[in-house]
Amino acid sequence: MLKIPDHQVAGHKAGVGKLGPLIDDSGRFYKPLQGDERGSNEAAFYTSFSSNTKIPDHITRFFPKFYGTQLVKASDGSGMQPHLVLQDLTFNRVNPSVMDVKIGSRTWAPQVLEDYINKCLKKDRESSSIYLGFRLSGLQVFEDRESGFWKPGKAEVKSLSADEVRLFLKKYVSSNTSSALDSKPDCAFASIVYGGSTGILSQLLELKAWFEDQTIYHFYSCSILMIFEKELALSGKGPCAEIKLVDFAHVFEGKGVIDHNFLGGLCSLIKFISEILTTPEDCAADDLLEDVQKSHIYSENGSV
Amino acid sequence: MLKIPDHQVAGHKAGVGKLGPLIDDSGRFYKPLQGDERGSNEAAFYTSFSSNTKIPDHITRFFPKFYGTQLVKASDGSGMQPHLVLQDLTFNRVNPSVMDVKIGSRTWAPQVLEDYINKCLKKDRESSSIYLGFRLSGLQVFEDRESGFWKPGKAEVKSLSADEVRLFLKKYVSSNTSSALDSKPDCAFASIVYGGSTGILSQLLELKAWFEDQTIYHFYSCSILMIFEKELALSGKGPCAEIKLVDFAHVFEGKGVIDHNFLGGLCSLIKFISEILTTPEDCAADDLLEDVQKSHIYSENGSV
Image (tube, rainbow over all chains, first blue to last red; front, side, top):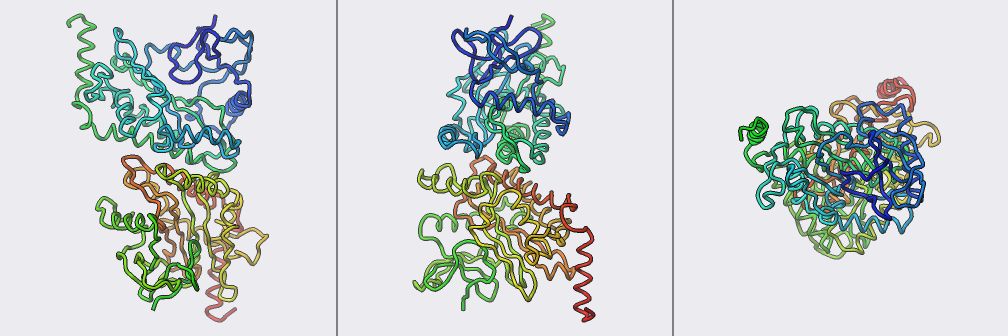
């Protein structure tokens, strides 16, 4: 039995009469193949990438595992339809905080049709893509079991200013995400989610080094998902954070040239995250994480 | 007495009835202030940059020195006109080989007017900018005293394919530039011009590190000039190669965001140049430089 994913933050969503991705209970994610060339292009990318021996292991881990394509009952009731079978990236995750960042100031490949370019360029200019080299496509931040998730609307997150993006990236790793919307995010989890040798910044830098060199693929309109679990972070059982690339309907051959568009946007995101780590004075007290961890342990022991 | 520069490879050129830059005999370059906002914008950039104490010395050396603005007799005969007074980058250079590379897949700032964006976007798409993240704006390569310079046309160099750009970057550092147009460039000077601790690649990497961090300026439609002297290279009196940034009529405030557009294009150029250094098998024999140097010494001694 397939069901609608709980933790999708961007893209088409499955529903009554609506075609969208589904998951099973064994960790697989079924993404409907879009009927036009986007579907065939994404399937072609996964097929090429998963069999490409030139991609180093420390890079393939940033991509969802690919299990081929399969006919499954579509979510919109249209009957059996071809789906990409992929790794469910939030399988076994309890209350994951997820952020979808669409990378690149330009979401269109040079070789596509004029009309499509104009449509994308308009979106890129209206969103933060042109200015920042990336835009947020969606996010959910787990607060606590009582309040659940803070999940701002799509339209709201796409056209944030630089200062607002900075704020959202801080809220994503804060313990006071929305309970104190107007107050300063405390960045309580910044050092363990963004920082450290296995944190998100370190993973982004590995990805960057690959993009400085690889000339195989150009990734347009592709997203980096950032995922971590607040409760896992609080328990001290790291590493709890990971990045994954998703959405490859607009991947083209690199033909000997690096993907300077993706790389530029990635470097911009890296700069934003680095700044959060290097200027803790812009967040609440440095030692807050310790306080949060202590209070969590206390409450588990029933002493609070 | 001001005169027309000998080694300009791109941009408006001075001539009878034509407004263009002039030089004097003391190493100064007089660039006419464009009448519209481009002129005032470039003057504002030089004024800001030259007094900005946050720019490290190892970066300011990549920019022309700025001596203010001055009224001088314009080259087009229109009388006294305001000019930017800058360092003449080829002063004291004998037969410099020069390449002008306009950096960035996008030559327009997000905040400019629609018409200007459309004009630039068209040029970016028709040239190699969108594909490669940069385009050649002009070049001259010194061959020898008999043949002088190889100086391909502007129109020719702007819309090169990736393979053609690779070829031009090889020709730029070869001893058989045009004498054997259809044969393989020998890349005789690659290791001393592009390579080494003071070579062009090393300078580009220093610039890259700054662009990964700096959020003060965004440089649209700005060029990197690469300059070296074949005869100096042959004499073994290195370092003979340098890079300089020029053309700041479209520089805007970075406002806390890195210049991902310039950085992406710079990384693409770096990749092209790195490949020339790491795949010498694509050029002629590795030891050719030594042969060239020997033959030069022989001929100086009159023994050939």
